[in-house]
Length: 152
Image 1: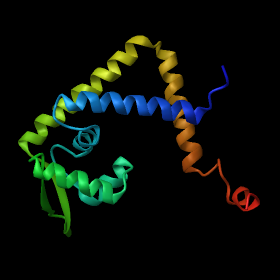
Image 2: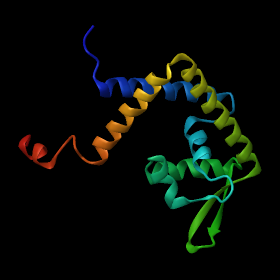
Image 3: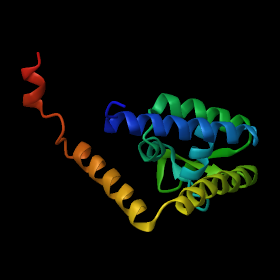
């Protein structure tokens, strides 16, 4: 078997996880994206709409569609931000709080299933690898501007 690249392993694994979450979300008449959004909204104080996209790593247009759909389903409501009159806070409705609990239970079940199959040191190693990858990306240590200009 040929060597699998790190990016391939990450992408293939994430796609498998996303498929699994979407299949499970169907049992709740939902999607993984809605579940992730429910988990990203502060259940007590709400979350500024402008902070939600960056928090989730999602583009504003994609998030807008999800929020509109969630509002139509009665999962969220929008309220003026008392600290910034121009802003809007996204709050969970009672129904949204119920669905958030369902989403949280699904995520915790996945985490427990994986943890049961791994030794503590293997899980710590996984988190160390992920942290290193994120650090290399955020510090722009993989593709330098001088590297890009050489390839043109």
